[in-house]
Image (cartoon, rainbow, N blue to C red; front, side):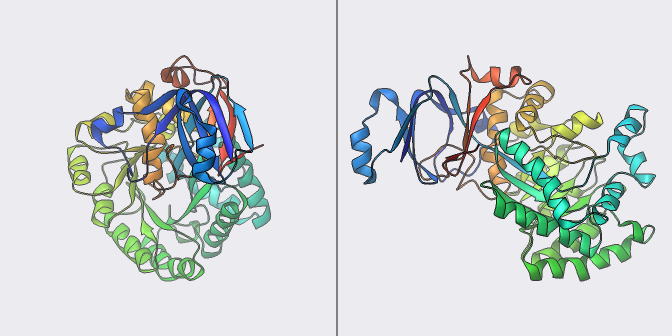
Length: 419
């Protein structure tokens, strides 16, 4: 066993049985100052205050010795971030579109000109699977170093049967290659493939009749997702795709209300979606629909920042007693960053959330949006030992206030310190 002692603050404590935090619960963050943490294999075996530490009693209780004891000298310990919405499998970059945005073109205008997602699809379909894996793994290693321990990875830059299967095979290789918890999502309905431009119904037919059955047969995805928004897929098309995915064992997720009040939130709730994501355009009807569901609202402030769009109405959801998660939306076109600490800082600065609220939104609630909160997303006995260590902090707010100052000095996943 490994014993970490002299922890300045052990934060984000939440025992098994609590799967998410809702409404005013998101203000609460259980912490212990001057703490210890015991790791047994890949799990947290216990924790407490230094004043009550009895190593011999712990060894008797666990039936094994403490083999390594390390004093953290006042450093803080946080549960690993849980990033429930990413598109990290892609080729190259879309920096040219960055210039287009600077020159005044909107995300929708770039998409209408045949750019955006279609540009990424062109690059991906022309790239071999091994090269795609290597480029994607660089991003995976980057987010691990920044404190992420659980991640959802979507397809959606193939837009052909083979391109989508290639992406999902790479996602499976990533899952097998890293100690993070990884969930994979089929997003063939991210846009209409270039070969089907002007023939959206035929593309939806192909997604339902060819892509989903093959993804299901190969068991490549945990979830099925649709970009249900203005200029992309309608609520009726979304219903069909999600229902077909569910027939093949893929639970629904959904992109909704990024560009307009699209009916996407209601479509997600109607189909029992695990989460509805984006939500930049969310009003009373959407909040009312979510209150009658177990669907996790998920907002992506990195996309709002990069595209200059509104930020999701997180405070309205708290007032309605809802939970919500914050995720990175790491992708080449609208959020080219997987830094979840920066996501939290945006939550504080732009969405007027407290540090406690954003930490809950990026840990336990993010885990819930991937059905992982029994395993990770908080510090708790029996949970995976997924956490990161920071330099000593004056308070929690400083972690998000000084958002560009390097603070994370160690990352632990499944009970092992990551090099």
